[in-house]
Length: 367
Ligand code: SF4
Image 1 (cartoon, rainbow, N blue to C red):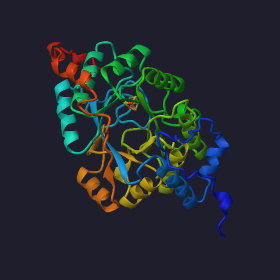
Image 2: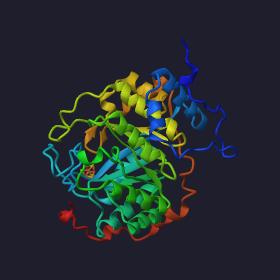
Image 3: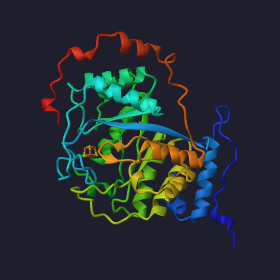
């Protein structure tokens, strides 16, 4: 028997700049848990209804992720093959040359990416690293891509420098709930992560922050993670939801299989709590069949990483993704606001200023 009590009241008003729908920042844990507890069909219906108020349901934003400095990371994140604390088979690589990064960005653009994310396995960028990452931002932006970086912890000054260089997004995941976090990472506190996100927001950049599902956390922890994100004074514009990739040599390599419906539910709850954010189906897609990915899109995921590597783990091939999009009638979301015209100043700087390659970068001391 249909039970209308299962469905929270949802406005069917369409979002528009003239008619902004209220975003909430005061969710309670009980409310979030009650969303998780909905019958699956009711939850997906709510998520899809909310999704259509803010987004074209048949468009997915496409990002490409490049590891610009790989491995030998001093942090001890239990899921990560790049941590120097674990024994994953991974050859460390020094910070890439700026022009090599630019060549990868051009390739990503040709393959349909609208955002280029650059990740470095650092505790934090050092003073001597900054000129190089700033140059990467300027040059990648100059070819008409949105830019995102994930470099570890930032102080206020570094966030300001990245914003001035034109960085659009900074990624720093919360990973899990504050309660479960100490079981996953001990070398960086939850509060330090929140502080970095505050610096990013204060500097005027967009925030990319999400977490990982399948690390042995409880349902309450999943709700706790989403609660942290949804109750920020401004929701992260981008919310990556990762499914744990169990990499050999990491402490989480023997975690049990995650129930796929639990992952899809997490996507749906994220969509309802943060309706105007892009919810990204991130790591773990390699282990999801097409039907599961389709359900994630139905639940409100509208962003993916595109390209065959995700930092150090596999991702579906671009051909496979194109076929899936074709089957589902999904098209790539274009980013209208990033054009040569709208970023003339940054482009001029990147193309006509003295290139930083004149400086010698001593990568031998890179972490
Ligand atoms: S900080 Fe990033 S690169 Fe370093 S161990 Fe943690 S997840 Fe891996």
